[in-house]
Image (tube, rainbow, N blue to C red; front, side):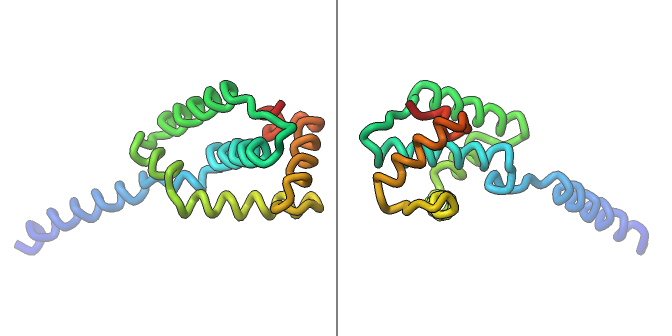
Length: 134
């Protein structure tokens, strides 16, 4: 009788273990997605604050659709992708990361002139961020 009771428990434990093993990490922890989202966010911030630099809107949108497709290919649902991209906490995290990035370049993230300088630097370097700017 003890084996009969244990067998269903063992099945439940194995099922839970399989679920844990296949659990997805949050998209913020997937560098192929998160680093690319950071680049887009930086380009948007630069183009919003710097009148002399414009966004490459169609390129950016196409890129974002490609990222969503890549995330879906990794097994993430539309709801998971939307939750990541709409999350206020994620937006705040990316903003803090962006401000730190600007400071690392010796610039002030609160000064539009410094964001213009950063945009020019990124475009000159042909970086991912610069590719979304003109």
